[in-house]
Amino acid sequence: MQAEAKESGKSRFGSISLLLLVCALLPATALSPKQGAALAVLSLSPSASGSYARWATGHGARIIGTTPLGGMVLDHAPDGALYASLHHGVIAIAVPLGLCTGSPRIEK
Image (cartoon, rainbow, N blue to C red; front, side):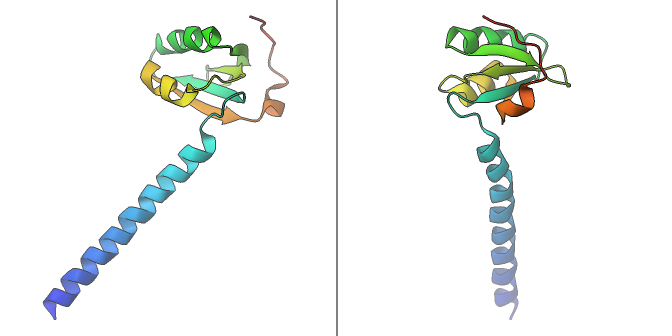
């Protein structure tokens, strides 16, 4: 009887863990920047944003504005933008370009 209860508890814990993992990965996948899309960049440290901006503009991205949280908005996300953002210490989130129309345009 106790063995069945232990197995049931382990099974329930495993199911909850799997559900939490899916809940964490789903938004991360949906919000990850796709190549050529617009993305918002939020810095985790003071120098990280500049470092990522240099990398991204060197790979074809354009800075088109800023975010209300002090980040920047880039257009034409380069390939590998998500992994590079993690390497540079920033968070890169895909955004619809239509939401960025009120931002001042800064040409490269």
